[in-house]
Length: 318
Ligand code: XMP
Image (cartoon, rainbow, N blue to C red; front, side):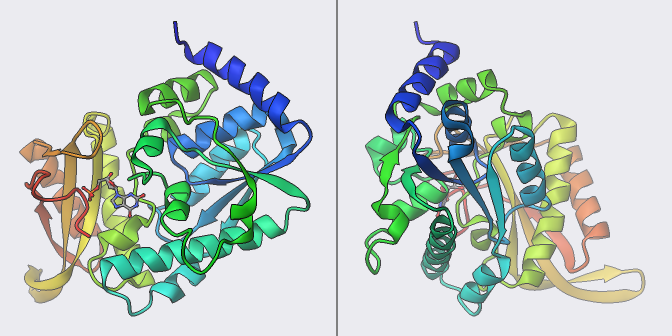
């Protein structure tokens, strides 16, 4: 019978035999797959695993810092890289969703390649590829590895792509990855995190991305997610997020007329992201979230709830 403990034990032994004293580089995304891959490799080769965690400035509020702390507490040899400005510069003026995705993928590869070059004598690239990624070949939620896959034919291979590849999770399904992560002591904040797209908040800001819009969206989203957690809904929905709409509408605040932005809340139930139903969050909870956002997030005067299922709508708006 398959157990997460037996899987971990066998995989760690195999990794030790395969990698010996070689150095390995791995990109952490904050998601469960890359994190579990890192824990297995860490147990097998310790400090020879060099993890890189890039802050693209498009993560949720405080997420880079809190996830980096978790990685450090786990004892991982991890380098946090603040590359926010490089991503914002590359995104400036772009409003087409595919152009935004391409720009983010390109900058990620540049940043990762720069960092990988600073590790002397690295021999392997580790990836958190899981079985569904192998069969689909393009992962919907793969973070760095998916980004790399969809960009590897652009302008020749970066040097880190010429490394030998090690993928310790490639026979596992998502729920098995979670069980292995739990067995290895991965904290709840990573283990039960909702899927989050590689391009992050950039595809939840419709139109062009600016640091100011990112900050507004982070603040609104933080209130939304906090309320989902406190009400017990976070674990009942498959994915949730806030979308910054490129329109303004009239509101009233005291005696003043306002003309500010609209955010949309999205929550869905799903098994694999291929189809999804909008979640029937209680009206009282939606009312509380809406009030908190409008009263606390400067720049937002209207909140709407997305009641579209996939298909024909998608989960993300871009
Ligand atoms: P859609 O919007 O296609 O999303 O219904 C399905 C799932 O995929 C995620 N998603 C992405 N993940 N890079 C990613 O790594 C992307 O460009 C991307 N676009 C969508 C989305 O968050 C949902 O979980």
